[in-house]
Length: 103
Image (cartoon, rainbow, N blue to C red; front, top):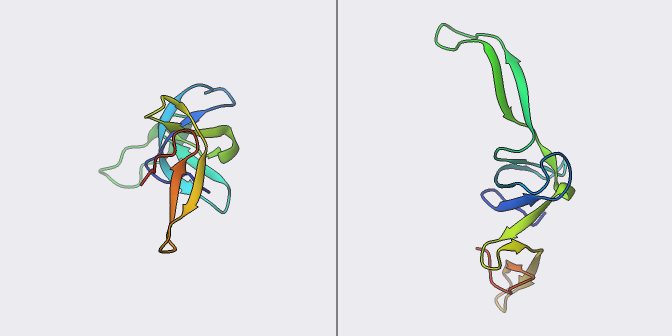
């Protein structure tokens, strides 16, 4: 997976198509990620203590990695990410569209 936490992505399929958001969490084994404000679901919760009240809580649900594309701020449009190996052996993420590094 080339997408990491705090990256900006755009949704390319589904009900939230065209919406941009920041990645909150990545689940590589399932091939899914949490995107801020995307794929919202309602969760009915019970009050656990005197301080926490029960009710309906709206939160994000994981979305499949194939339904998102990384957003390149420099180009102003979505772009793929490729891995380049430096001379010292380290691997870095690079935008395919512009050639700039992400990290």
